[in-house]
Image (cartoon, rainbow over all chains, first blue to last red; front, top):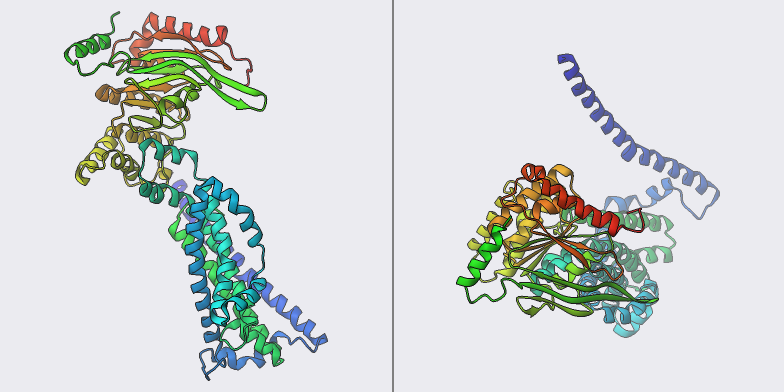
Length: 279
Length: 285
């Protein structure tokens, strides 16, 4: 009897260890080995194409940029940290604006069927306009690089937030609106206790799509805006000077930052909506 | 067997001349409800008449699709009759309101609020002028009444189905509605929890004595709870087929009433109504 009781305890301990091992293999070792394989394929490939540097050349060429991300020689000649920081700042401003406008307009059109029917087709068309297509009109209308860049981020990021919020508001379960009706809840109570929490998973889905798009848009916008500090222009500048290794390094950084932003939203989503995340 | 309930209500009527609606408290008069469809008008209910006294416990029984929920929706005010009237204390029901609180089929608790907050939301909406302390006491008293003091800070997703239904009942009773509307409240629960909750509901109702309108599929449940059992005919154009008086004295003891010969007489009568006289066409239900 005593033995029989002890045994499951030890086996369960083993399974925890096994699970941890399996997780390390799944989540860290497998991706790492895959990365090494891909890098070697790239290295071999670059032997046959002189225009594309291999991973080893890239690191050799950009060693200084990797080591000194914080250097600042004035003008646009700054370390990669400052380039990314400038781009992120623009994203933050444009994105916040898009979030505020997207959520409030989304709630408004979600609540009013007529307004929704009127605006939805227009939004559906506008949201498919690629970020780069907005750049000329933004530059023409606003004349300056900085506000134009912010506008491009805003206009790219606002649609998924707006449309998801509207859908979230429209999809409030009938049960909840019935409760609000029976209790004759005041508007503010209805908004904060029922509408907003109920639509929140949808709003977050929109916010998460939008952060990816905003990051996509800023790179596109900066590439055509000469003379500003930012990772997008950094790439364009490197291309003009034929520094392909720098472009590749910048691409890696852009990818890492984009991934980080997505993870940040994911973390926020789980933090704010524990247990009711809609994927 | 004389119903002691009626005796008391008559007494109260004679000593309380201000209240003129003791006997026709809730009056459903010649109600028809139809919905437009592609094939023309679909009549769900037609010629429904029912008068309910204040403080009565009414169970409504009938096959699925006979319009029980439609009828209840007109009492709670979510929909209006196509013709005819539904009046509470002489006033036509126009919209939902806390005087006709509903215990919804799916509980309808807000999952982002705790059990306490769910009840507080209702209390706060109905008694905005009461102090925070008073509202807090009402919430806690009602949660204690359904035995949920321990689970107060949990969210609805963290408690069992039976406990969720208790929260819904506590929320409904906390605002002291004149009519309590229950749409198959115990349908999704296991047999033991169901019996427990039926007993609790009766106990609480004994205190508050609000008028209760409840849909059920379970004849035994109706016989244990109700003063009157309203049996509906089949749709389309369903109406009230018959109203049975349940004569058992209160407080009721389940085991005791089940031993009474009348229990089986009424039960068989109701079963005969449902499965012979108004048998459902499709047996899939």
